[in-house]
Amino acid sequence: MRALYYDGQLQYREAYSRPVRGPGEALIQVKWAGICNTDKEIIKGYKGYRGVLGHEFVGVVVEADDPVWIGRRVVADINVGCGICRLCKKGKAHHCWKRRCLGIFGMDGAFADYLSMPVENLFVVPDRVSDREAVFAEPLAAALEIVEQIHVRPSQRVAVLGDGKLGQLVALVLSLTGCRLTVIGKHPDRLQLLQGRAETKCLSEVDVEAEEWAASFDLVVDCSGQPSGLLLASALTEPGGVLLMKSTFQGDNTVCATDWVVRELTLTGSRCGPMDAALRLLERRLVDVLPLISSVYSLPDGVKAVFDQQAGKVLLDMGL
Image (cartoon, rainbow, N blue to C red; front, side, top):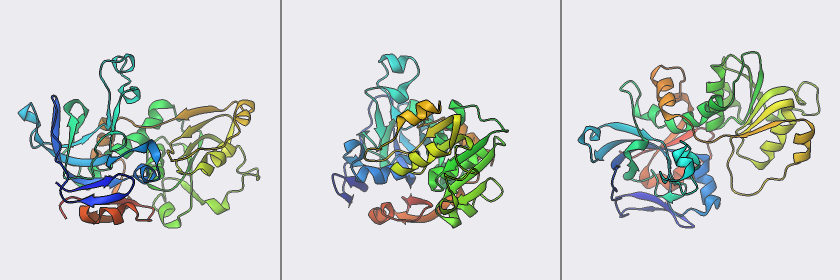
């Protein structure tokens, strides 16, 4: 099968070994896959991963122990726990110490013609949700994790830092709460997509020394993907507020934790979220993800796709 493989250098392979599904797993033919900033960070050394990249996908089950799954269009929770440890038994497989994560560590990912996943990780895509929409289920679920973790009230001032793929989805989700939402980014065309959903500001307009901005938000969500983003997000969070961190990147970050103590901030890390809820939002048309797509590539052009510098979502169409 074809695959986009990373072993210190990203390369397209025509003859990569097709996965052999294990007990309780389904073999899935990938139809569409999405490129995430995490994929780009892996190439910089994040997690030390070697293998097929990709964790955002929609596909069709071609093999499974239970024939009811065959032919079904599916997306998947990308975290595979060991199933027997204390965390897994408490329903926290996302944090299992021995977990594997699709295309990020421990298992080959979705930038290939086929992948294998446990059936218990699969979610059937509703008929009303197109393939192009379904490929957004995983990052949309990550955005929904915020409202799983934190009660966002309509009266609160909320800022999202970053107007890229994840920042856009986070903003769409938070706009449903009725909060006073501001999105800060670098790309006017990306910010324009949020017209009517949030107030938008270019980063160059933000002065953290000015009273309008300094420590003025109840909740700040950092989706910048940059080490500097956390520092800015911290400066924007009011005393007693919540600083929620969505960015994952290769490298270290230098912060002044003493400032967080003095201002009594609540710090929250946030990662993967509820896939079933993401599919419901897509099915009910509560969020429109299609305008976020900036370009579509074939798998043989996958290396070029990964290094595409556009701010929008880049997709791989496996049928091309």
